[in-house]
Image (cartoon, rainbow, N blue to C red; front, side, top):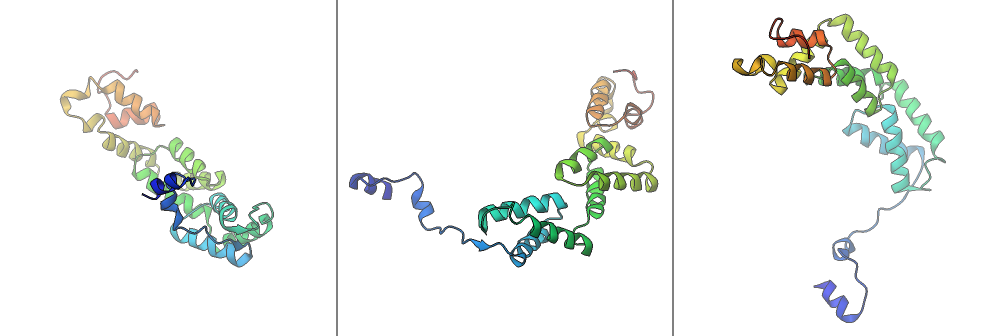
Amino acid sequence: MARERARREGAPCERGSEKRSGRRPAERVPVTEAALSAAALRYLDRYDAPREKLVRHLERWIRTRGEPADPARARPLIEALVARYTASGILDEDRLADTSLERLRSRGSSRLAVRAKLAARGVEAGAIDRALEREKAEEPEAELEAARAFSRRRRLGPHRPESERAENRRRDLAALARAGFSFDIARRVLGEGEGDDEF
């Protein structure tokens, strides 16, 4: 309706401008230590994030809400804030790596997949290594259990009807290999002696 009236009166009208007209632009906030801390705590209250992700969030916040909207100028404030949160334990890469590892393993992620997913999420490589080493010491069969969880989720091997297992063995071995599990682990999950051991 408003677009039609604007067209008749010769006024330019952007598509969807009626929807946006009631919305005021976000008010810019001076970039101070207190403002950054408030933005960081709001974010960390919702997400257990690694340091790298928090830094990216704060830089994005500065670009969209900060005054001046220049993350490079606020870099010392961001670094000081991250250092303080790390020292106090609010940011803890080891804790994040441990909890993420446990969750990913329960869903059937291999050691290789865990490493890739946590690195993509921004978790430090050292924290990932330490979490995997702790797991190896505490749960030597963790990789096998993860492979079993993967095969359960994907209905592979022993989770297929018995009549379909032999004909799908190679396909199931390939699925486990693509997920990052070793051939030995895949054979154990699918059952020793079930069909040919070669791809």
